[in-house]
Amino acid sequence: MDIPNNKILLPKQELPRSWFNVLPELPEPLEPYLGPDGQPLSPSVLEVIFPPSLIEQELSPVIEHPIAEPILKALALWRPTPMVRAYRLEKALGVKSRLYFKDESVSPSGSHKSNTALAQAYFNSQAGIKRLTTETGAGQWGTALAIAAREFGLRVRVFMVRVSLKQKPYRKTIMNLMGAEVLPSPSEATISGRAALAANPETLGTLGLAISEAVEEAANQSDTNYALGSVLNHVILHQTIIGLEVQKQLKLAGETPDYLIACHGGGSNFGGLVAPFVPNLKNGEPIKCVAVEPQSCPTLTKGQYRYDKGDAAGLTPSMPMYTLGTDFQPPAIHAGGLRYHGSSPIISSLLKSKLIQAAAVSADDVFKFAQIFAGSEYIIPAPESAHALAYSCLKALELEQEGKSSTIVFTLSGHGLMDLSAYETSLNGK
Picture 1: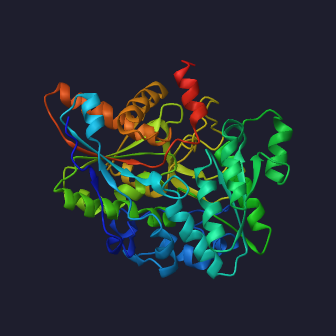
Picture 2: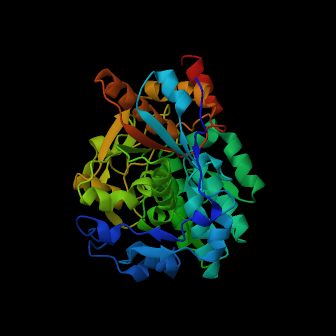
């Protein structure tokens, strides 16, 4: 098969200069965050852990937010990222559908998480903050924040879910190389962590508990703020650089998407791809936007839409979301980044209004199609990203059986070079 040039590239000057704020475009205004008393939360309460600039972005009614020049200069180290026509994957599957992937794996951290990590580190540094705390599941967010903090002269402590740290120790090595401190969560460093260990010394940890530890520490130290890698509105705002680039690249390719697909944990990756297309969806354009999650953590497909806390200890505000409950703990076999019990209020609102769809895929399909992708495109996808890949492949095969073809775009949200133990287990049939 003669493979044409398959990368749709944008010149550096085409790097978006503003983020897209989807809040004014939602079908219904988001319900407010609630405080411990059940009343709408005053924005000033958030100043304990966030700088004013990020709080403003969290609640902003403005559609376009200019990207500060220092952030643009840092993003330009690897952005715009390529959108790639996966000809070899199409051939391996034997399908006529056109499969494109937005390659976010080319960032310094190896994932899309750097898009918001740089922004959050910059705005905190501008506010005079010296130190950040955060949580991480598989380690991609912790890695991204460690790099971003180094870029803007901040120190970082990362609480990494215990089972993930055990399975992916080299993520800790990378974070340490960038100057970050990494603790297994639950840890002895916080009240939340000590309570969890006292209740169950063998606990595997959860993302919700790691959030509790990071928030607790940030709230109790005046020079320290908290940084979150997903869920919140300002995080999705920063990630819209993905979808904005995809819009330009689709135009260059002369394509109109039938499907926009991304994996879903807390919502930042999916939201970053889809948010700029929400006006198109409201105008009735027939684009199917699908958030793909694991069957072992089915937040959108089996969760309830209600107010819930964002963390296990109840230190965060209550937010309207699809949720499995803060006490939900995925099985140990699923220790990737898609472990969160809830979903972003923005994504939850879009799903509730039926502008987007949700689907869950099995671990068997994830690793089956990840191996096909690795063997055809020669890129090892992160297991999280492989959820979007698996659904895209299954959809292309389904359309083929029906004698149809479509244009399918999915995000390769990160590479899997630090996840080889999971691939080794899969290859060994375990």
